[in-house]
Length: 353
Image 1: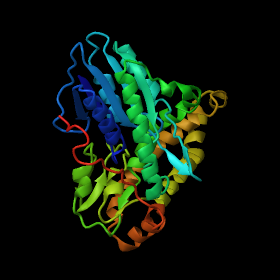
Image 2: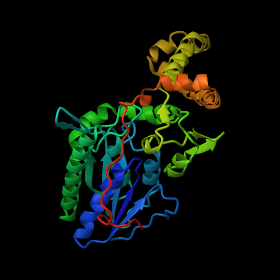
Image 3: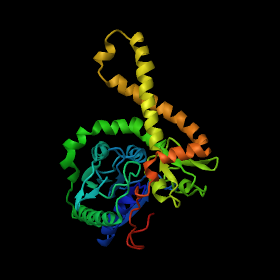
Image 4: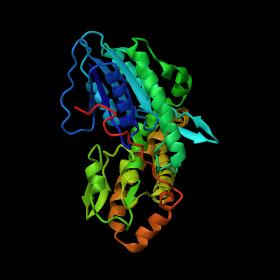
């Protein structure tokens, strides 16, 4: 049996899991598809003959925390079980050319954890489905979304067929040098960047308090506070809430975040660094290079961001504050499209169990 686990925000990794499961079933092979975010998900159990598959998005050039927790909680392979890793990453289409995203450490870390637990890694495949990080860029046009979707469906099915033929597909190793080069960015995102994203989301006055975002959040990171959605530190920036909001009320507070980042950096320069110079031996900070400053900037940024976000949530009840925050948000403009992954036809993939 193939035990196929996936985590998905906007549906890309869900579709990948469905394509793989459909290929397995077409060969008469048994497959169990499991959503990592499902509250009823049971403890992971593998038999000696089971194969393990994982499909997950790439967040900040790494797997999101929910996927990492799954990997590290995996039991050891009963008998060198075969395993594969698929990561969806930010594909785009420019001037008719489909351009790939970057995996960072997602594939490498996933494979190393599996190998350390006794699995035989026979598949490592990035799938360049449409980028969905709407906080950073507008959603792709519908035509480009469909082209990328169809192209990736064919690539994923070919990957599945290769594994079913008992052959290996380690395509992810082709970009290993570049992925290693951006590995520090993955660490920075995990330690600080993901919290910046989590505390950048706000609900405009268009929000009617329907609670759809709270109910749909795959990791339970949202709650209603004063009848408005509030994003907690557990947010994994999967973008489901922003892309699925029926009133398009969820925005990224770009101006607010940029202002805080600038303020935190200025505070470190004006107060923290001079204080450290008085406390540590002369020249130590200079010999350490830019690392202490980088660490201080990020630590203070996270602390300031958490405190300021609570104040912002209360202040958003004031019309002048709400209008200012929305006006400095790029996601508010009509050209800043949202993204929804095309759904497969009902019955085309096995049901989750």
